[in-house]
Length: 338
Image 1 (tube, rainbow, N blue to C red):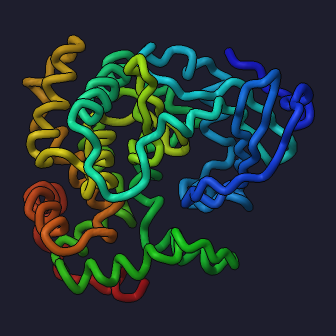
Image 2 (cartoon, rainbow, N blue to C red; image 1 turned 90 degrees about the horizontal axis):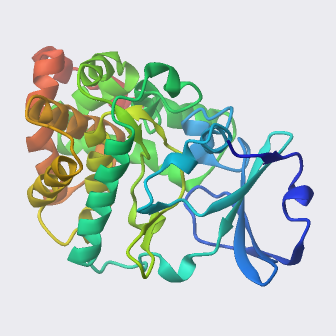
C-alpha cells in the first residue's frame, strides 16, 4: 500500500530545486523539475481542470492514485518500471513524484522503434497481463471501465467538453477526425459511432474472454528502456480490468507509424509472448483479438487515413457486422452531426 502525502509541499519538502518544465504532453498536465538529495525527479499535476484526458475518461477519483494507494503498482512484474516514488493529494489535485528517466525514453520523431526494443515491449506487456490474469471484477473499482474506454474519444465526449468551455487541442481534434472517418469509410464509421455511443455489446462480448490489468496507452512517448532491459511505462491514465488484446490493439493503433514490423507479425509476437509467460490462448485468442481490434478502432479509428485506415477497416468490419448486424452501418447522422 502506497502512502499518500496530504499536501504537495509535504511530498517535496526535501527539494533543493523546483522549476517548471514543458514535456510536450498531449494531456496538458502541469510539470515541474525537482531535485532531492541530488536525484532528479519530475513532479506531475493531475486534476479535472488541468488535464483533458482526466475529463474525457471521467477520472473523478484519479486512477493512478488508486493504483498507488491499493498497492497494485507494487505488484507489477519486475520488468516494468512505473517510476513513481511518491504521491500527494491536495484538494482536487493529485501530484505524482517520478524519477526523471527522460534520457531512457523512446526518442521523439518518426524513426521505427528498434525491433529488439519493440520485442521487449510486447514481452513485458504480456508479463503484465500474465501477472494479473483473472483479476476479479471487484478490483475494477476506481479504474477505467471497458465502456468508458470506448466512450472517451467519442464525438459526444468531445462535444460535452467543448460545451463546458474547454479548448484543449487534443479534444478539439476528435470531432474533425470523426467527420473525416465518416467521409472515408462510412460503414465502419457508423459501427464505431454506434459502439462509442453504446459500448455495452462490445464490452459484454469482451467480458466473455479472459481479463487482466491493462495499462491502456502503450504509446511510444510513454515508453523507454533502462540499460538493464527493463521497460519504462509512464502515464497510467487509462488503467482498467480489460482483455489483454485491448492493450495490444492500442499499441498497434498509436504506434502504427513507428512499428518495425507488420501489424500481423506484432500480433503473433505478442501471442507467443503470452504463451511463454504461461497464458494458454488457443480457446479464446481469435475471438478476443477481433473484438479488441474493434475496440481499438472505436477509440482511434477517427485518427486514421489512407492505407492505415484501410487496414483497420478490413480487420474490424467483420467483427462489427457480427456484433451489431449490418443495419448499424446505414445511418451515420450521429457522426455528421458531431
